[in-house]
Length: 179
Image (cartoon, rainbow, N blue to C red; front, side, top):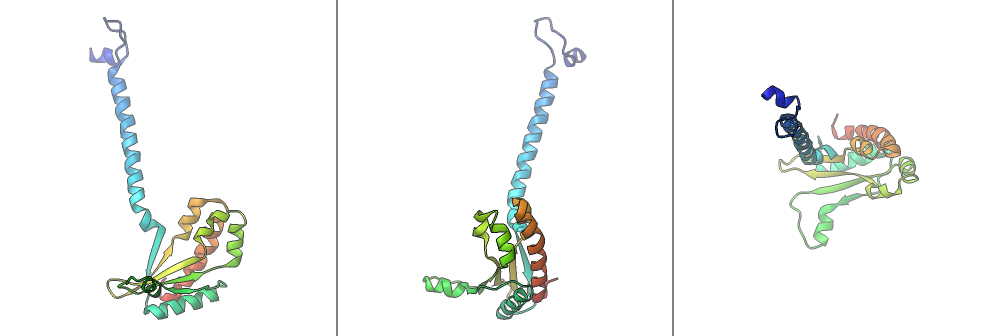
């Protein structure tokens, strides 16, 4: 009888057998949906680690900032500012236990290429490095993963951020003892 049911023949009550096939198909579809949902959850949880790269500096906080500024300018970029986040936060009446700086960098040619086609991306500009003291007393530099960010957007953003910007940032970060 089991073989007959799986072949989809008509049963005595007029219904077609084949429920096992549908059950197997349904189980497969449910498995695929659960697998995709799990992959999405894992991807979502991994996103912060993928979007930001952290590099240990071989130098103290101020020297790291100065070395980044010099390397930024050597690569043909400008350094609009080095922002002392501790001072900004203290001015607002709060306190920050660790030292944090934001080192801004801009390349007018790259910015023009992106913003002429995709002005909504201006919220990501200028580019910046976060420089901060870790809990272990060491100094770290965090940077956006421009290659991944570029690929996510595609088009001119992928071309510029994923290519030129990512390559320049690698050279700039070499100034802090990062390879």
